[in-house]
Length: 167
Image (cartoon, rainbow, N blue to C red; front, side, top):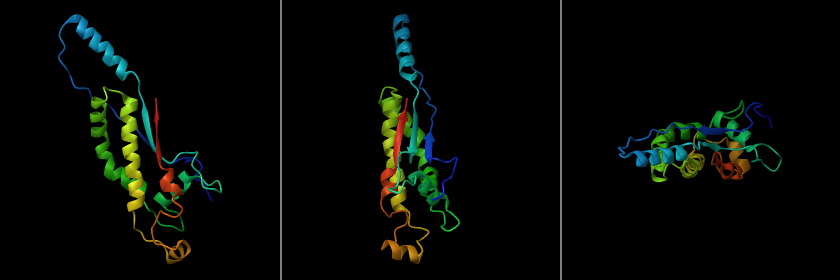
């Protein structure tokens, strides 16, 4: 199967800016300790990637990321089935507010907060794969597969969706 060349993995890199609420702290030692603690907690940046990674392949060695990209964007022979694009469009407005709440709830722990968020976004990605029904499959594909569900054949792609938190 053809490869996208430069696109070796279809992954969505989610980077967020965190806005801190201002707090009133009085007393020199308390202020210094609070600032040192806050600096320690926010000094550990992290990134979140959600999608299909290089280590996910089909039994014949074909990259799952490549197949996912072909499905999402279409090919000369197959129409786009934009499960990934639709998920990002529909769900991404929720991610920054969710991350802000998670950071506050997890004492500004970026790794823990992004891990929780990554699990949620990965679930959204898998749900988007499962929910997509249009455009319908060609009759020849339905005959070969034995059913008419787009994006689901061996379940390799949906089960290969994942996330990584890098710190």
